[in-house]
Length: 430
Ligand SMILES: Cc1cc2nc3c(=O)[nH]c(=O)nc-3n(C[C@H](O)[C@H](O)[C@H](O)COP(=O)(O)OP(=O)(O)OC[C@H]3O[C@@H](n4cnc5c(N)ncnc54)[C@H](O)[C@@H]3O)c2cc1C
Image (cartoon, rainbow, N blue to C red; front, side, top):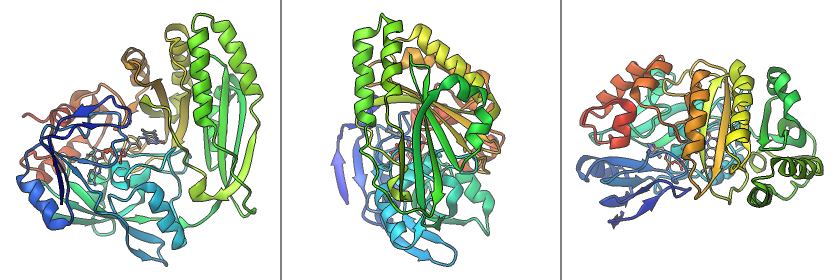
């Protein structure tokens, strides 16, 4: 077991830091159970630190599940696979593809640990496509007293729904069985169009195809549309990924033209007009994810789908009248409803609106001004992205909140996984 004492930890964006008394990477189940029982608390699990909130932060022990990786078993008939929760999504997609299986959908990146992505209900876009926890068939989790618990959707759906989006509060997830689909190819298309028209026809556009999303480019009036459809057409080469270069260009324009919004708008508008449309066919695992090299911080709220356009119009107006420093696009997606108690998509077809702020600049004034708009429309925050809600507000927007908290108490009676941040989030007295 690897143990680092007095480690300095930071999340992907650098906004959240921690100095835990120890950071450990257990080799096996016995080590993990012993750590949970005896290591200095609070105990917080870490995947790859891609969350923007303080979920992983701990002055006690941070536990990495890096040694719980790989494909453990699979069922070709049911198209199910069991993987270690520490498996990173990129390598996992290759393991699945090699056995003819595929994830039905993915988010923007594939660098997270699957256990981390499950814990925060990480999602992609698609009106009929759920977030990662909807794939769960079975889960193995080490509870707050170091005991191994196994839950199965067939025999105990409530348990899966209770711990599916766990925020690392119920225990350390060591392995999961997920329900996949047969490997497929995707036709990916990208083009620009005025955002006003997209918002006018929002519901029909966002639900017309299997997967639709768009990025609104601040100060441009333009949306970059992205669709992914399953196809039997032959593979064509994926064009070079220019997202990082595009964001750097937007930053440069911001730097020079912050006080000249009309010129900024006209230059960005004409640059977007010249963007060549993208249209290619590739294997599923080579389409969804891109590299994100330019660091940012992010707030994302999930709203009832019908509120999406109204909320987005207000967010755009806020950004363009009061926050000229913002250059990162706003990402807009739709997500299918699910049954997971702490999933922000619980029983609700959702529109997700994500706002970004370049790091290391201060994101808080923009996010604080945007949050009341998201909340006014009934938004639930992405667990891994910045927000200021605590148990009082969260319990009001999660119908099964009390049930989930009761399961948490049963699984972690000594509050081993409760850090100050988690105490605030869940309303646990310390
Ligand atoms: C560049 C970038 C792009 C992103 N794109 C998307 C996107 O497209 N869609 C989306 O929904 N989100 C997206 N996110 C957010 C990201 O997917 C989530 O924050 C995710 O939880 C990060 O996974 P991680 O492995 O880094 O987990 P961490 O941030 O390390 O941990 C997240 C939570 O999971 C818990 N955890 C981790 N492993 C375990 C385990 N084995 N057992 C129990 N608990 C565990 C931790 O305790 C913590 O509570 C993005 C983030 C970044 C930085």
